Image (tube, rainbow over all chains, first blue to last red; front, side):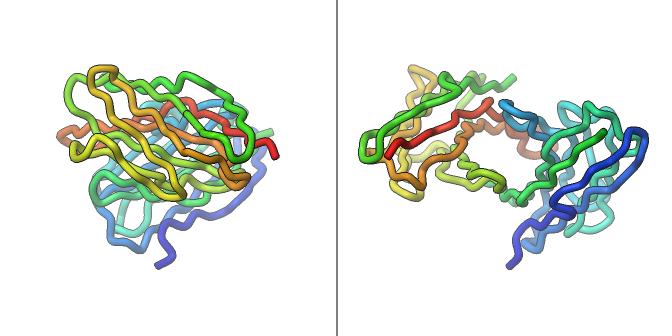
Length: 110
Length: 115
């Protein structure tokens, strides 16, 4: 099992550019989550999904979009990158209460 | 609503001495509680979890935590710190909603281990 994988590991964007952060899991988990982690802060939930075709907003969804066409994949889309979106992004999945995290994507918006 | 407070943003201990990382939570009912560890430039790894069974929970790498409902606390301890324990630690509470589990993270405690 690869667990939860994320690509890319690191990316620099210019203001106004768009990109998709990829997340995949091979554990057949129903639940998937996107978090952002800012320096000195805990993780903030951006979006989550309870299964293919079902997504919902978390605490900080503005500026992001998600889709869940398959159980395995849960991409996060940034349409118009802003400096405030500079952060480390973590994807996680779970079947019950235990979350499994990917290694993170470090994003810098300049 | 659930919330988590980690009382110390930084903790520094000498190698071989005990570790105590403090966590308090607020919850309207019996919560599920977790401790995760994050090593530099890595993802989060589950250390241990409490889900309404035994109040003293043992985790990986010699860590344990005790759920104290009367004090709304879930402090993480280890009898003897190792250099490899230096990392960021997050206390997490989960809330079971009608759309599944949502998780609330503390702001983290950075543990430094001095040789």
